[in-house]
Image: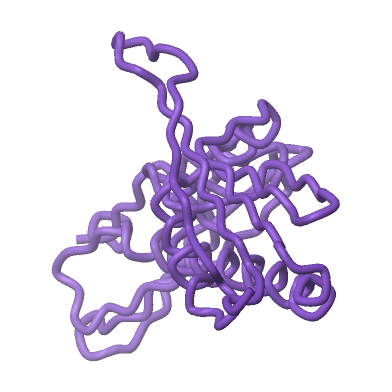
Length: 219
């Protein structure tokens, strides 16, 4: 049996987002090359190889569509340690990921309204509250590479007494609101919903607004 008979490398088809350069392979999105390389290595099949260890190195040239994956298989063949190397073409398709499509289309499901009832409190904590919101969103997005499971600020409108954040994920926005209500100056949280249309299945499209008021509880 030849070396080529025991190693099977499936076609490597990837999609690259033209906006953010994230990469999708087999339905999964990657922001780190390391994670992509690990999954390419896992997709390599081999049989009758002892102690086989597979690694992959991706060389990307998206503009010229000249991208390859260098596959290395370290294994025992007979009583000899061998390093088998393969160069495989990566098939690239360009597209726009869900997140970038939503941002470009100004798509949002939720408005998080921050309102300050007291000017002195606004001066003291407004920057801190905004920073906390950004930090929470960053932490939530770091947990997954699936755009559909992320939350993004589609628009940010600053007002005289606060700021409105337009987001694309109701569940995560609710989590942010729960966190913000732990502030000692958080007075109340209000949730309202409105019907903004009908989807392709005939169901109502709901848009939610979460409003959090900050101020002096003793006033």
